[in-house]
Image 1: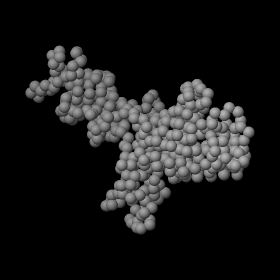
Image 2: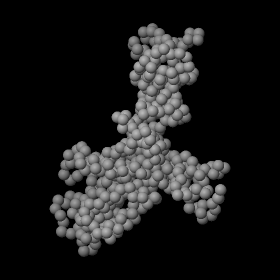
Image 3: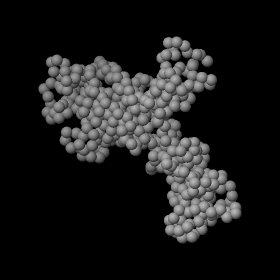
Length: 208
Length: 242
């Protein structure tokens, strides 16, 4: 790969310099474009407002964004949402933010859907058993359709993280009886069995 | 002030070559750009271009409603240009009218080539433009501010979009028409372009011009867009510098 020297190098922004969209940051002979950069007509341009960074080993140039759009989810992200509707085989979830890879509260909510086969590794007879309307659930994004995001709660750390009593509205507390996990209401002494509860129920810090 | 004129003045350019607001033939009105003025929007910008005062908010990429509007391969860019009732010398009936709907469409089409919409399929990006005070050239001011608001929202862009208008007044080609020149002049040529790529994304013409006059107008517009691009760049760097 060609290494630029002297005058040719001084034409382009230095490492850490603030650039705006459309600004030329390198020639394609010197660096290939990484994140937030794109190539066109033999040059690499910035696609966002941010600082130029270079990987000298891999010869990649990219832009560290000064303001990342927070409203985006990708496959594999762990998100938090509220169950808004339950059918026999599916549940509709209003996604309010993500906690992995970065904890972000979205400015606008997204719709997601969980199919019964994606809820648990064990057999689930009905969706009504494992989720209730209003439950806050932690789930993983596995894809997207025109309807919305496809979600999954398979795994120990995924499932209901906060729930309220359907009888009196008080917060439900987790009780572990042997291998069974149940949710108990200290207000009206009602017990809820069979929910898909996340391992960190009641301890998850949602958003500060 | 020129924008309060109710009758056509005898001359729009005096014998000294100065226009009604004291500008020279190829002089832009002063531009003030501010980035990130609205707290709840993903990106926002405020522009004062002469007496034009415009505020732009960008929301998204966000979930699209109604769902059947979603595009499978790219984000849908939606734009709403709206003039406040108090933005004109005489009260304007609020709400969308024929002109606002047309301007929303042309502004959307002027911004679209600059965005990487294909990175956000099945979502919507909403641009809301609110004209608080107008004095001619609101569409070019709106495009200039909207492109900055999009960059502020963190939406990846190929380039910023700068816009400017030229026209023919009293038989002379002038840059950046104000409302009186727009109303009583002979022709008007608004242009939006991506200054780095030298690609024109909007071109409209109202009135009559010869081919030479058109070419001259186009040339001065392109030069002005380069100056406006610098103002945009400075505004962004001012906001994001440490």
